[in-house]
Length: 480
Image 1 (cartoon, rainbow, N blue to C red):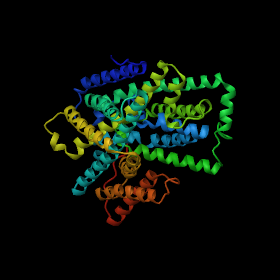
Image 2: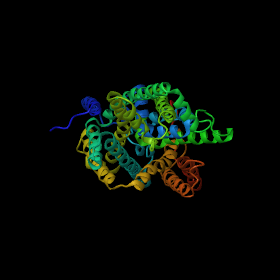
Image 3: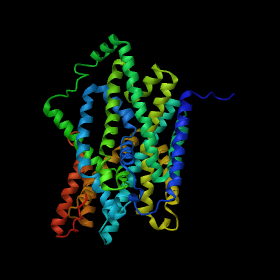
Image 4: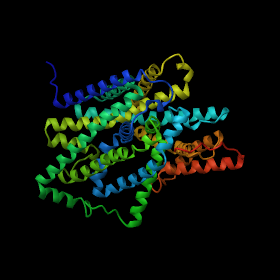
């Protein structure tokens, strides 16, 4: 007797078919692409903004943001405000410059930018070291994404754990290998639309349930503690320090995440890239804020959820019908899929451009990416299958450490500050070392590791130039 197909499964299947359709469309458009750097893509502000924001806002938005709102109430919005301030600073100074330098250097990856206008053996070493750091950081995070997808399919669709891991990974690997970088951008837009609709459904539904039983809702909110629905978060000094920390994290995140930076490289011009700021920030802030508010309201509707990070799924499966539940499950899938896809493509580009470029010299760009994405996907699945809980946490810590190493180098390069291959290499390695030491000392709760790594990298670059008396001529910053 065949197993009945549920409404949620049908809706997820439709979403996956749509994503694959967009990837196939992108593949056909990609036949006209040349291997001349991502600037040849010439994407407009909507593709840049939605592509970058969807990629940057990974599965944490549908899990961690809900849990933070559930635990701390509206005070959690201070986090989003701090991040907003950092994003505003980042977008004022950097994306247009990143695009400009990318166009000059015909860059596809961050190492391409860092070695631009440098020469010598240390330049080759700088390229290789940065590429290895990127692969290590992104591989850990990609494996963690597979584990998140495994948990999603196993809990939401009752798929056994190992098949769930393999199935989720193969879905993403499949459309990533078809569409390549262009497909990654196009599918990001589809996933952004799914997530936008899902967030509206989530907020509307939880508000309806809160208003439907106001006495119980008010009682549960009161039980959560005084000030749960207040924006105040301690004293002025504490709130300002908290916001400053997250603003700094937002700037370092923007500079140190290769899969997001690639979106800025692909803009049709520096001006077009910079004009995407309101799309990027608007979409990202809506995702953060809506899920935090959902979590706070959920505390009043369902006060006894054992795992608040699963609150979005638990609420809809317990309280609503099959169609609404299916919509939210597709929304959760989309949050994991966007980041996973971008990680795969960025790792493949890093390998083909910076690790073993000669191995692919007889193949066109589309075939290079296809082969490498399949290889990276296979390795990441095996790594995920061997991971356990502690390794899962280690995988997530790899991302801020990678950012601590790369952010200073990217800042130095795109701002046109003096540097050499030796100073950038020392800045990258020194930034990671400083971040690791800071973390081991337990100071991460005061200033985040990427912030310390970035500051250390900038100081090390200056110090190496000072003692060596060398430095490349700053890049021409006109038009940036």
